[in-house]
Image 1 (cartoon, rainbow, N blue to C red):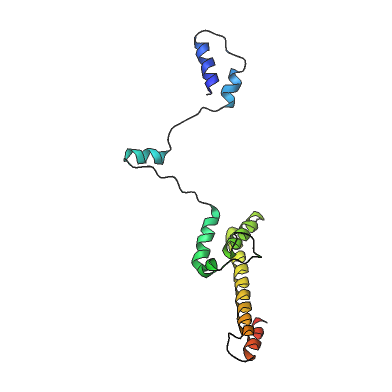
Image 2 (cartoon, one colour):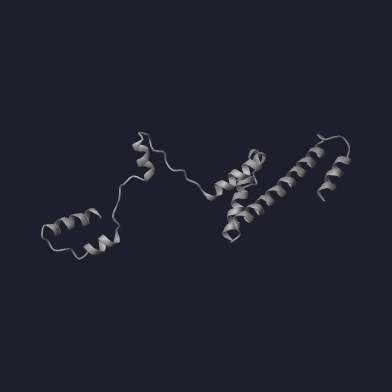
Length: 153
């Protein structure tokens, strides 16, 4: 009950008429409760400082699984052409969220998004090997470049 409603209720107790707005205000605003949550009460009873509850998002599980599986991808530097602050793993999480919003089941969306990551990772590794071969850092001879290009097709 708001402060105004409390004052009106006190005046009604003293014999004044109920204001026209009283029922609307008391029904519109729910009663306020300042009771502590259960975990806070339990911590205080034990003499401990209450810890805040963990904030968990559905994407966190996906991030954990991807970091376990593709730890190397998390360490890869982000190129300038990639979106700001969005590495490869984060793109997988975003892609999974998009697929789920379109109605794809969460497990299937995770598999599709991960598949996209692995194909891009393989493509990037191939480009890196070809670039090293072109720079002459790889074994001498043009056969290596031919082998690499044949593997990709």
